Amino acid sequence: AYPFYEYLRQHDPIFLMSQQHNQSSWIVTKYDHVKELLKTQSFLKDQSKLFSTSPHDTPQDEMTTIFQNMMLDVDPPDHTRLRKLVQPYFNPKTIKNLQPRIEDIADQLIMEMNNKKGPIDLINDFAFPLPIIVISELLGVPAEDRNKFRRWSNTILAAADDMETDFVEDVQAFTQYLTRLFEERREEPQDDLISNLLQAEEEGEQLSRTELYSMIVLLIIAGHETTVNLIANTMYALFEHPRQMERLREDFSWTENAIEEGLRYYSPVDFSTARWAEKDMEFHGKHIQRGDLVLASLSSANRDESKFERADEFDITRKEVQHVAFGFGIHFCLGAPLARLEGKIALEKLLNAFPDIRLAEQKPNWRPVFLLRGLDNLYVNIK
Ligand code: HEM
Image 1 (cartoon, protein in one colour):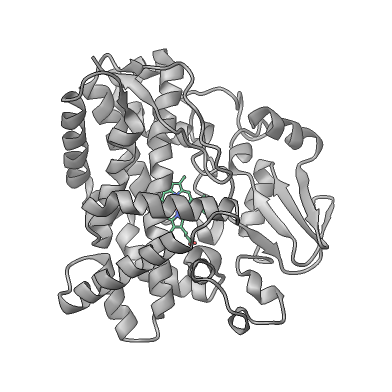
Image 2: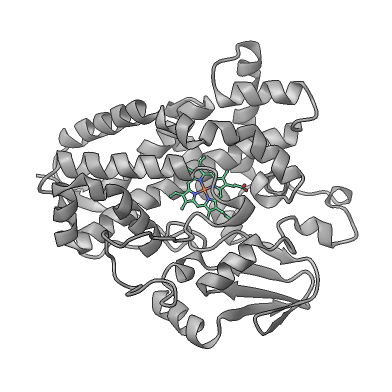
């Protein structure tokens, strides 16, 4: 993908990906253009605003309803209201308090890895469980159920990629699961995000029942599918650059920088989510029509030579890595402080615990998912 993006940045930076029934889909590949797209309010998140029939007039499946009510897919003022409700849980200060707990979880996982024989899948045994346990505890969903979330959110992501995917059963199972959990929490509120959102919902005005489901589904999916990739992709980049891995192991003051460089170099989220042109407009020489779909390639922006010197080189000592891996503008990733902290703890714990850690296979496979950049497995030897 990277050589293709480079070609596009040089020759066709606002790329017409497809054209169907008068609607075009575009990919924006240059750093400056990506930032502009993400901050321009005339690219809407809520597609239904563009058509005269309200989405509520036509019957629709449960998944569409869940997606349409996520804060990620709505515009102000709804976006502002929804984001305000959860923002306090994700501020850097609040997140910092989770550090000891995240360290404990990492230690526990490392202990279990130590007890295994033969190659270990760093994804299955570490990069996946760490963020899902953390987000489950923060929300107040039992972490033992994490494999169910994994299946459900994989299905939802697959369906977002390819509408042929059969998602009905899994989405129903997911919402039924949440309904039961909400009942339990209503009866016995706990000190967790779900209990607090339920209270907000009961008090009315702040969020609707549908928005509540959408919020929890969004946080579960966003909270783990991405951070897995941050941890695994950065470790993989370090395996590809053993001298930098050694340098980091000797001096952990580079860790935060290494995480930022990992986010830039192998960006876990390849594309921003959909934006729709509110009106006909010119965008850097291309005529975009009302209703067109426009996507930002974050991966491409993060390798743009006009922004980053030696953009295709991985360098943990790169200064001020102003990547757009977490997006930009009002939808800038809510979970960025959490992801950064999890990434830092993960890297330091792994490098400390396993001085001889090395790849067990030379070329792991990238998952064929359009939106995300992550590996299927990352087999390592630790002894
Ligand atoms: C939004 C990336 C981790 C929750 C976003 C966006 C990106 C992103 C690119 C903006 C999408 C767009 O504008 O179309 C990442 C990456 C992560 C990560 C690379 C890990 C390395 C997390 C975590 C959470 C989270 C741990 C936690 C709960 C969210 C939410 C939004 C969001 C709720 C929507 C914000 C809004 O619409 O205002 N993320 N994310 N993310 N992310 Fe993350």
